[in-house]
Picture 1 (cartoon, protein in one colour):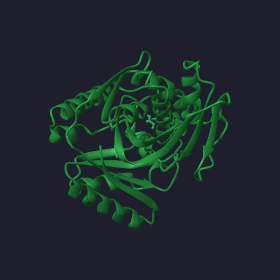
Picture 2 (tube, helix red, strand yellow):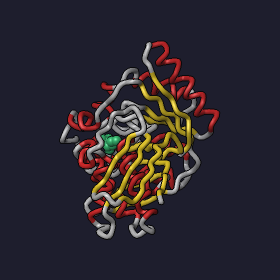
Picture 3 (cartoon, rainbow, N blue to C red):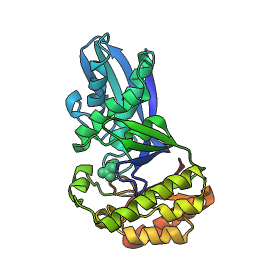
Length: 296
Ligand code: HSE
């Protein structure tokens, strides 16, 4: 018996909520198939061209499944067949999709014995392999769906946030930014005046989602702490943001640790107009890119 899941891409941070907010996208998705195996440990077969490690401890899916196996002592081993469609290092939660998807699949195989919170805990071991830090702002939305708040990681406290329909445009300039590098360049201290602005925006964003207040969502999509540092790694960041807003986007910014940029729109027509605006900026600059237009 095997279980196959389509594990979705996610946008971490949602601009102002570094490490505490994220949402799941409807596409792209990784295709992950898990089956019980008589061979101890985790066997990994990669069916894509990303050349990811097949040694379980060094593989994000492997590390997540090993953590699960430690608490499923009646099972000897698991076999994973992985076909990734989310490019590693693109900033839309590629490692989280791998880590979260496999534990969701394994849990189905094992009669759903674990809670969603357990699955987040297992999958966070994959993020540790990927970037050295057990952040949950891609993992939690991948497992819970929708918009997710991680109020605390130790101990885990995850809250699903109701949100109105939102359309998302993502542009991925074809460079790779490693999350570990994008974390290393951040300042370790923030000014109180910046912190005040930031937590005002986070509270505004959450209130905007819950009250289905699109204007408040748009006003709150501002980051005065992380974006000024990280945006220098992303070609044409300011131009893309300006053109997207002129095309009608509510707002947006760096997706996770980048280099992808995402924009939220109220309706599909605007999301496609934003895509056209992004394309015209990168075409002018001669930057190679991919785009996705999808929903939360
Ligand atoms: N919150 C993490 C970061 C997400 O911004 O470093 C990485 O995808």
